[in-house]
Image 1 (spheres, rainbow, N blue to C red):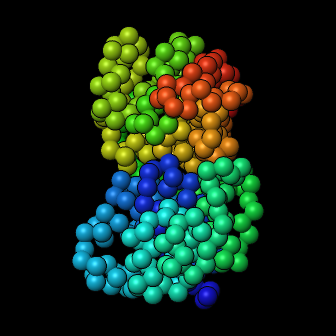
Image 2 (cartoon, rainbow, N blue to C red):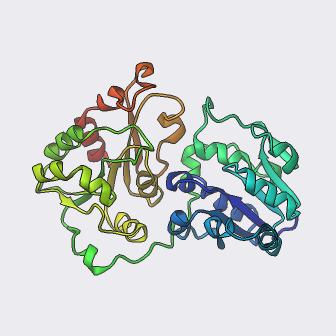
Length: 334
């Protein structure tokens, strides 16, 4: 491989997963400073990838997949990629990379189609792994001759989230420069077990108003689901459904901290160096050992128990047993 390779990272899934993949770009640039890193992702993660100074180009899979197959292959060929890293395995992309003739195609043994589309395959079981998601991603860099035995604390310095969009005056005016601006993000759109609105209400009432200005974030649909709760807490500033992802990223960057379950905003806040407190269930594979936020001011809370009786239910009393005072204490330490 040349010292200035074109390397394609493929991760066409959710925001939090993409955040935890982007340190790979930082590590690639550290090893190959002249490399060109291309990120293949979905439309809704473009603004997240745009934060990373280590990514040179974003390739939109939502646009690519609608092209005729011959045109898809031509797009891949024009990338002149020497390597593709299949971080989130997807059969259509694996076939495309093989048909386009990308010389080094790295994937996992766990996908049958990788056996005939990838020429470097790693045994990388994720479900029961003791490693963090970001550590597992980095293992795919092994065939490039790179050190892949990094601790989560080392990975946190590899995000390169320096390209933060400017916050508009409309949203900047909501912030209080004399208080700690704290975002509560109660909902997860089904991607994680939730702490519950009752716990967030208890947390809000434990936070001294002279010290904290509290915002509640989420989608417009989240806001509709929480409208009765928001009426009960008029001192909370409701920003649900008011921002694009790009604006919300800028708002997180201008704020001081965020509390949420295992969601994209939690990982964005951690990567931006904000106080990011994640609330987790003690259940594989969604436990904090695998998905905790990685950042200099990030932390995770989880109950020390089995959580086996919650596995088949959307309601998880194990996460809801985390006390609001524990969150308050963690905020005070940061």
